[in-house]
Length: 395
Image 1 (cartoon, rainbow, N blue to C red):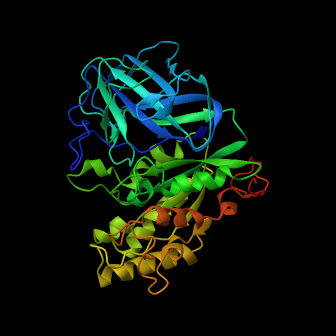
Image 2: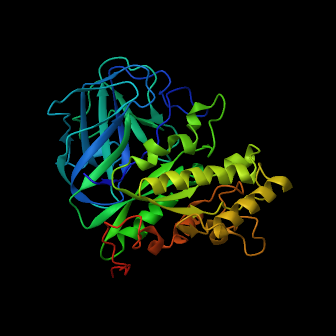
């Protein structure tokens, strides 16, 4: 299985402010049903379950996958039971992730799957992804084979599922991983509408004729580049610390797009400190044979974290991204989303209302700033690929 398509960035279980996610208390005799956006299609899928931050093993009684119809309901005839080494149940060790066996299922690009996991025993705090801009579902008992989904209540987080791989579809040669914070994760986009900028990038890549890439979203709301926010584990460990699990070890990873650092500026990090973090990620990506594209930080003047001193840091960081020559390519997200009258502010049409996060139109403009030729050109660090540079859109 080669092409990573679902979410890739879990955090430890705990209480999450402003959220009804039960990850802190954990699950017992419950089925969680996660809705997962697919960037590419195929006829075989494999699901990754996670207990990456768990302190004890988690027993999975049963699990299933299906194509989403509406809400918690599956498209009739598409529900498939999952097995693990041929067994319906499995135990996810503490600190580990677990792949299901591949299962035959025809899925279309830009569609959604429902991944259902039943936990018969108390799990303790559950590894999760807290901010999803996506409704997910929860019900008492084993409902993994429930097609209609009528008994499920909504829950705002992904739990236990960290991603889906799809294989044997059209010629997808690898995966581009978008590494970032809330602007990559959900921003202030419309819920259940798949309006994140990596979703828009997936649409652009799906429209390419010839070899193309799938997209994995490794964004985490509130995340820092350089460290963890004290007392707020729901924002995840820093990007430099989660890089292996969330990016480098993902199936089929070929290219990274890095858009992170605005939260570090808000916490007082200097431009040299942020640039040093970028260099660590660049070096580690290159050591694994991946390309890495640097995304300039979006304008933030007028937001709650803006100060003149932080503006100077932002300007220095973006200048280095553009001219430092250490990234394999640059996506100038700042220029693409800036106001024509003031390049230090988000364009009004792209601003969600807080002068920091782009809304739906802003995330689409962000994705449009990515040069597809930079994602997978012929390159000495990746001699085995067969990208032919044909980026014509289908009629």
